Length: 634
Image 1 (tube, rainbow, N blue to C red):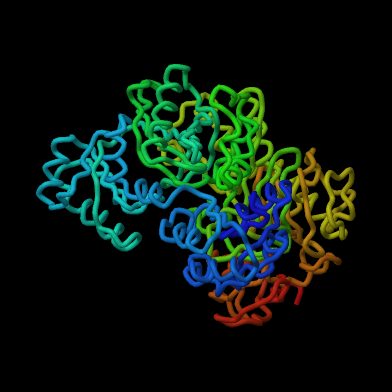
Image 2 (image 1 turned 45 degrees about the horizontal axis):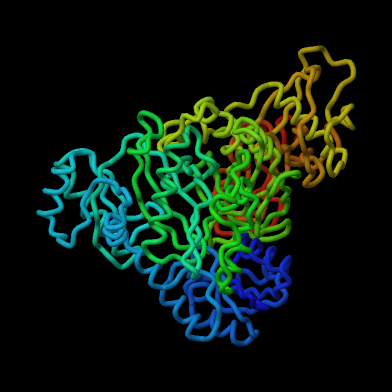
């Protein structure tokens, strides 16, 4: 066994590989870009080397710099993680040529499976069922048009070197084929430098089934059962589970046998995944599952396989790369219980899933489950890399128990001010169709309007009342107050007020009038930002709240009508100017932060006393942007 390993990657996969390496007594070496100088994976490694500027092409994708770092640190092996250089056959050859151990499949296997058309041809020869279609050398528009007609519409045009949904176009009618083909070719050329395509029949209710395989240089090949990765958004996986719901023994044997044949066909070594597409219109059937592609690396979703088998797949990678045989025979690999994984992305589902970047001022993950992450509180989510910041993994006896546990975990996520998809994930897991196992790759698209709706759209009176208590706690200076058994110094509260009296709370910029005598329930979790301001975390969502305090009420940062920046950002608009008469809720200043616009509104009817910023100004958290004077107080 080698004594040191350099991980040519970043984030959660680097941390994941380091965890196994430490347990095995292997020295760990990290590489990092300038943007990752303070990243978690850098601190967790025994040694770390700067390899270039923030853009990946100048750092993590620069093979020469990675190899130079390995030489400088005396690394004996290189683990590529996933993404970046993990499926680059030239890099794999360069690693071995440098006298280092390559923790991955042989370059020939990477090349054999790297192009979708060549891989399908190879699989047909190996007796692996493939999706009906055309993957020939003749790429003329006339031939491709004729083949699409032969296959029958709808068809799927796919770039042969594609991945992640790039260069993939569905065409429903013959008259739309030319435009779809041109688009797929452009994307293939732009993303992969290869305009060639293949054509497949389009499956109307597709399930994404994949099988974890492992091979060694002694001729052994095994599978570690299947995973279902059908819950996707625009071809990007969101929730994965193992085993696949509705998979009977006969179908499982057919698909896992096919996966092992595929691995043997390319003399595979190490961890790999054979991906299949299934026609789920009539359940999973052995004759309705076809080979799609092979990923010649460890997968993001490998933890669910580890959970049901009890196998550390990274340890197996190390051992096979060191020349050892696979540790277990096929019949000795168990299948226990059910596992699910959710990918936690830094993105805003309520605003088109736009990436959310910036500092993680508050970052709390659920306890009692496996969490794989490469970030921590105080760290940064960079614009330069993938927005996945963590994976939540659960294991239980049954699918129902696993789904419940993962939904609870997603609901316990607390991240601020970066937005996440935790609330979206929780809604997916709680959806009746998902609970029933009635999922396919179109599930999220069909249900997205409800799943991605802003949590504010469902904010009710009871919620606003509970948030009011949080705002009052903020005004009282509590750092983390949950639950409350009293008003804790409620600003503006009148002991003799009639039952119809209300108090206003501002939630994510929206005003809510709440009866003071409402019988509230405590919020789940709350963190104070400053006097009179805080964040409530519930069901995976974050709500910024502040108490509304009219002028003259005394106490609180808002009593003078000052509008403060809730986070660092750039001023993009000033709809109001000094001297303007404004009404409650009217936008005064618009701040852009983390690629999103945030309108700061008048807290009450009044007159704008001053606007202290201009368009283009960069402001710090807490900066006073404008002041509104209440009507009648002048």
